[in-house]
Amino acid sequence: MKKFNLLLIFIVLLSFGSCRSDSETPAEVTIDNTVKTGKLSGKVISQNGSKPIGGASVFTFDEKYKIYYTTSDADGNFTLEAPVGDRTIHIQTGDGSNFRTEISTSVKHNETANLNANQTKLNQVAKIAYVKGSYDKIEDIIQNLGYTATEITNADLANITTIAQYDIIFLNCGSRNYSLNQSLYPAIDANLATFVANGGSIYASDWDVSYLVGGTDNTNNCMLPGGFVPDSKLCSTNTGSSGIVPATVSNAGLSTALGFNTLNIDFDLGSWQKIVNYDPAYWEVLVKETSSNNALMIRTNHFTTSGTPNTPIGNAPNTTFTTVCITLPGNIQISISVPTAAVPYLVALGATVGPCSGSTNSGYIYYTSFHNHATGNIGNAGVILQYVILNL
Image 1 (cartoon, helix red, strand yellow):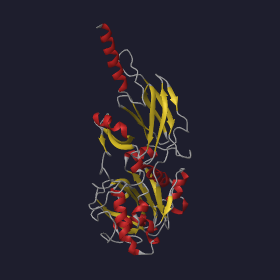
Image 2 (image 1 turned 30 degrees about the vertical axis):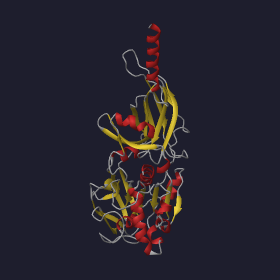
Image 3 (image 1 turned 45 degrees about the vertical axis):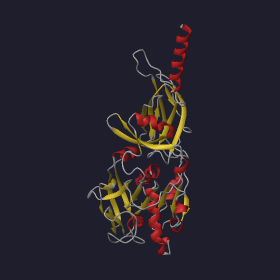
Image 4 (image 1 turned 60 degrees about the vertical axis):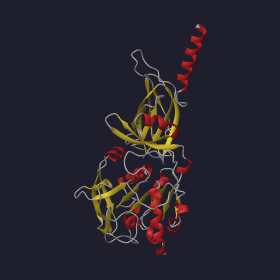
């Protein structure tokens, strides 16, 4: 009987051990049952090592899937408290679906380990495309960060098979007039709707609001034919005048990531698209005019439409990561991407599948009324646009 009892105890202990995550070791505890922790410090930088990245999520889990989380400051620096043992450290921007890095490291009790720059580079996992414009070159900013983007054309936008290869599409100001055959516009509009509804993300600047709400080169009136964003959600008219516009960063997360909340934006052309009307329940304002509170930069992930086909976009068919929403202490919600195998355990702890806000399937749409390459000198607006690239 004693041998049987010893065997039973051994089996029970073995079963407890089998429930641990393969990538994490059990957190040690002190005499008073508090978890032993150490710290990891580092600097999040772009893939080529040239730019610090603020506002990045840095986190890990213990074997019970409790999250340990922090963010990088405006200079990219972070310090993460984590349970002792072998850990996988995640570095992400946005919700982690397009830019993320995983680091395997060991955490020691009451010690601070410094992660080196080769470990903390933010990797591109998204496939990025851009359409050439008359005034902007967002591709230069992408490349200056060490990331890659493929040039496509308006004819490519009219082919859903082509654009479905990508996760992000950048539309440079003036690119819509590169389509000499305006009969392509209906197909382009329909394809962009399918792209975003299935999780692809878009950035458009200035005149290229016409891709969103209709028009050709630009928009002079509300409710023009074409586009794919409902007319009730956005109206922009080509009525802005040249000059310096004092602006305020109205999004707290963006302000923290940038390290500033005011800037001067140089509108260097004689006319630019002013946002004259938008649905505040649909769009989030990131940057606005200081004097008038008029929106200058907006984003949404609330796009929904009926009748669009379910189309796999970019890396989505092959990814082993899933976006979830986790609530931190203080009722702070974060959207992150985690290994799909971890999702059931996180859901059991209260996480939900999908982003914390917006439509579960929708990608992001970012729109700026200002340029991303104004005469090659855009000042602090360039840092804002780096944030846009990394958070799509």
